[in-house]
Length: 90
Image 1: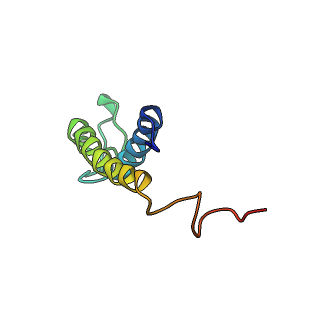
Image 2 (image 1 turned 180 degrees about the vertical axis):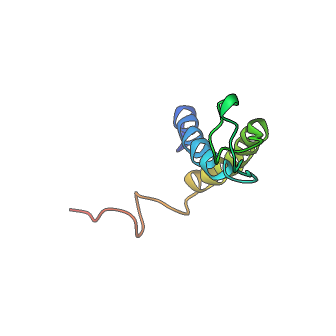
Image 3 (image 1 turned 30 degrees about the horizontal axis):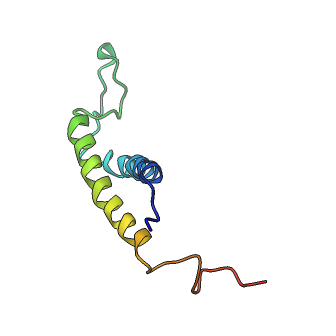
């Protein structure tokens, strides 16, 4: 019996993806100390954002983490029905 449906799998992946995005965004950014006001840039904005690479890296990182979460959820390693994480019987 599967414990993670396709819908909950997509929801978990999206949550992991957004969290991973905030981890990946600051990697490799170098701020522009002067900032080109004519180009709309502020002081401290990254010179080269490389957003395409960061989105690809986020997607790959989220996929690896999602597979790990899926393995843990579908296995019997952690269970809320029995074991130390379960609620006591009334």
